Amino acid sequence: MRVERIYRYPVKGLSPESLEQVVLEPGETLPQDRRFALAQGDAPFDPASPRFLPKQNFACLMANPRLALVHSAYDARADVLLLRAPGLPPLATGIGTPAGKAAAAAWLARFLGPEARGEPRLVEAAGHAFTDQARKGVSLLNLASVAAAERAIGRPLDPLRFRANILFSGLPAWAEFDWIGQELLVGGARLAVFKRTLRCPATEVNPATGERDIPLPALLRRHFGHADLGVHATVAEGGRVAVGDSIEMTSPA
Image (cartoon, rainbow, N blue to C red; front, side, top):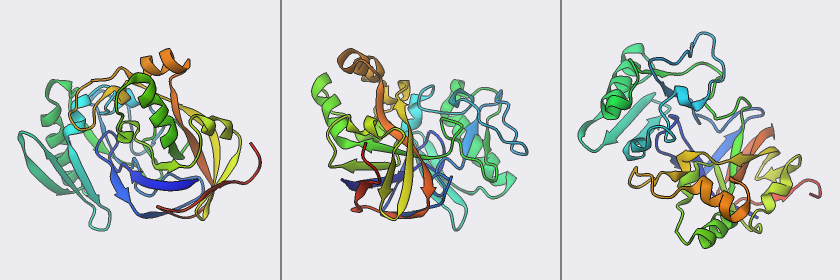
């Protein structure tokens, strides 16, 4: 088994950043992954006392498919966020300050139009990640399972629909579900797999067009009896992971 691609998503719901390598820390996400989010105006998120909230409280592809048309890039060293989208002038703003966060939030709210509820805020909180479950971790996607889904539904599927962190090859389709409760060596890191990834309507959105064009969760249920694709793992032991690294089980499934 081999790591084929690595992605992080600095702003929840926005575009991915492809990485050649990453250093994982125990109990954490990929560095900068889901560090920021656009909290809707009615979301009860408090940066001073952060807690897990369902994705509906934030701009996300499940509720806001046009977000797929926003290209974002985050420079962590300079703390600058670049935003581009059709119909709006590009924005580059330092989001380490309240003014910079407000500028990014206003730009995104303008793009969302009526989908923006109240006055959205670009938020972050030390030690907090805006993941889709309370437990921090890393998501893994078996490219053979994606191919099996493609064959079943008769449509090509861009793996970016699934917004995973580590895409890998070399395992039969759906065999990753046998990893639940097991540990993996991924490059120099050790991961503990704890759940299958239940797919939501965000996967219906074409990442190139921002349109809902494939009812993927329903099709997965029809063809396979479930709507799961991929798995989640926590980082049990940190280390470097790079494209091309091997993946090995530490104990038999």
